[in-house]
Structures are given as structure tokens and as C-alpha cells.
Amino acid sequence: MTQLAKHIIEGNSVLLRPAKESDIEPYLAFLQDTEMNLLTGSQKAFTREEIEAWIRKISVINEERFDSMIILKETGELLGEVVLNDMDTINRSANIRIGIQGTQHRGKGYGTEALLLMLRYGFQKLNLHRIHLGVYAFNPRAIHVYEKIGFHREGVERDTLFMDGKFHDLITMSILEDEFDALYGA
Figure 1 (cartoon, rainbow, N blue to C red):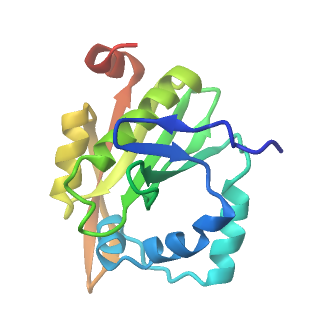
Figure 2: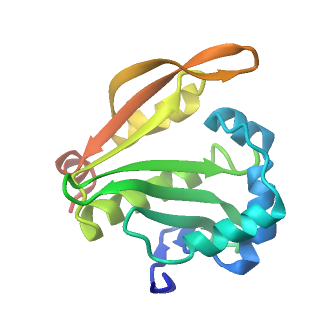
């Protein structure tokens, strides 16, 4: 398998790049961010060994996923990740997910910029037609960002997550390549 070293996507404030060994500690901190785990419905605790193995796995090209670390250009700090996964080359579709670490980094547009960079990459470089996601109903800030970017609500998967003693709905959303092009240009 080929390294993803040349897959750096640069924006104004952030850049997306493949994972590397020096990301192990900041990625472990990212996965231990309580608010991020709540917002994404993550309930698993990861060991350092699991993170090391995961970083090695996602640092190589894989036909089913494209993982990128979100890096703040100004400081080089790892802010989070944005991932295209469950890629289906026949139907030209993929799932997208994103996580931003730390309340100090949320609400500053970094996630929006990272999403737009990855959507552009998915539609223009990977030839995707449809990119979809799931967001929990208790995360109105993310829902607002996704709708502002151009995602459309498709439906609700009822009671998909059991957390904090109750069930929560998952809202499914998607954006198509022609919708993205109409909003942001080809």
C-alpha cells in the first residue's frame, strides 16, 4: 500500500493531512475529549496501544476510507479529524464524519472549513456523487452547520444510541455533487 504523504489539502486556517506517528499523543487526547465524545455518541475508551495500531492503519491508502487529521495552520496543532468512510465506488457514495477537539476550537469555523475541503476532495478527486452523514438530534449546533453547508435532511433513525440512561435519535443527511457545485463551484 502507498503512503498518503502527498494527500495534503490546504485551506485558509486548517490543513488536512494523513495521520503520522507523532499524532499518537494528541489523537489520544482528542479521543478522551468528553464533550466531543458526547456529541458524536462515542462510548469506548481507547488504550495507547489501540491508538498506535489505528494510526498505522489509517496512514496508508485504503479503498474504503480516507482519513485526514485537521491541523491548525497557525500552530500545527491537531484539532481533530475528518473522514470519508464506507466508500462505495460503484454507487459513488461515502459517509463523512468529523470531530473537533476542545471547546476552545469549536465555533471558530475550523470544522466548517475542514468539511468543505473534504467534500470538495470527495466530489472532485474521488469522483463521489453522494456524501452522507448521521448526527444525533441532541447536537443542534452540528445540524445547523451541516444545513448551512448544504446538507439535506433525509430521515430519522429512531432510538439508535443509548447514552446516559436514555435513547437518542440519529438524523441522516446528505449532499450531492451537483448541489455542492451549485453552492461552491466546481
